[in-house]
Length: 228
Image (tube, rainbow, N blue to C red; front, side, top):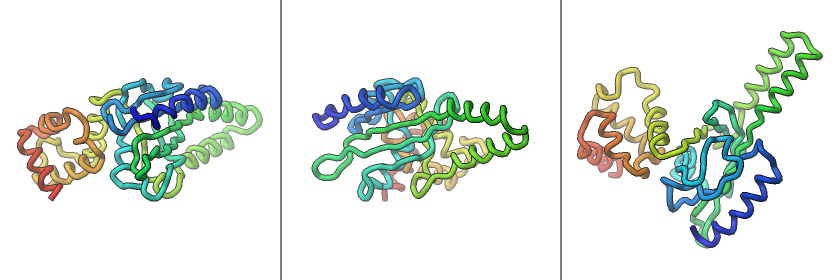
C-alpha cells in the first residue's frame, strides 16, 4: 500500500461513521487485484471483508480507461449478495502521472427506506396506487446515465467467486453447454472474459480450461490470438 492510499484509510472510517450503516465505504488497492480491499466500513452490505478481490465492474472501468477523462463514476447499479439493489459510486485515486492506483467506493443500500416508503403509502392509499408507485420506483432505480447505465456491479467475497461470476456473465446468452461450443463461440466468450479482466485473476487459466474441457495450452493460444 502506498502512502497516498494509506492516507485514505481514515477517510473510510470517517465516511462510514458519518453516513451510517446503510452506506458501505471501501478502499481498494489496484496493485493487488486478487485481494484489493484494504479498508472497509459497513461491509455487511456487500458481504466483503479486507482482502476481497476487485469486482468485474472495476475491471470494466479500467479496461475502458474511463479514468483518463473522469475522476469518478457515480450512481451505477450494484447488486449485493442478498439481492438488494445498491446505488454505487467509485472515485479513482491517481498517482502523479494520472494513473489509477486505487479506488474509494461508496455503496448505498436504500432498501430500508423503500420498505418504509411502501408501508407509509399502503396506509394512506388504495392497493393499486401503491402497486403502481412501487413499480415506478423500481423502474427509476434502473435508470442511470452515461457509462453508469452500462455497469452492473456484483460483489464477490473471494477470487473463486469472482471467477465464477465473470464466467457465468460471459456465457449467459449461450444455451448450448460450454464444453460443446464451437471454436468461434469459444473465442467470443474468451474475448468477453479478457475484457472483463478474468485472466488477471490468479488461477483463471486452469479454471477456464476445465470449464471448456480443453487444455491450458488451448486457452493460452486463444489469448495469443486476442492480443494479436
